Length: 132
Image 1 (cartoon, one colour):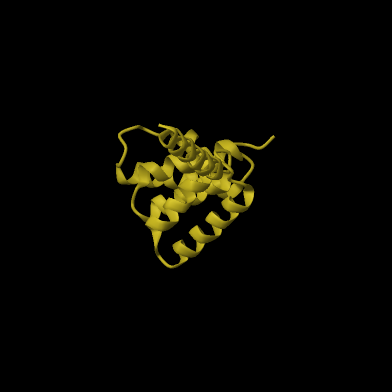
Image 2: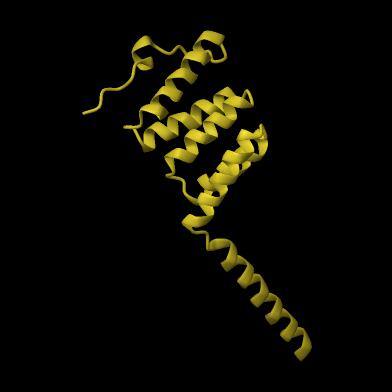
């Protein structure tokens, strides 16, 4: 009986240590994931790059660059609707980034021209927002 309680306690401590280790993500890991994703993308390994950028976004949901990069990855894989969502989130997080706005606008134009989305995007919504 004593041995069973000890085994359960040790198992619980082990699981707790694993969970604490998994929860202790820091900025360094997001930088590492991002660098790995960029190298994977440069090698044409888009699934791997997307996987890594998703990890960055899960750790830091407000990382505009990761959302933009995720959009690039999705677009490269032909997942245009997902790319549009990722670009949109990047522009929401950093509306002053010209690059994010250009990617988002270009993706929406692609959707409109290809008829991938039945949603009618007005010409006004395709223009860049003014920066105040």
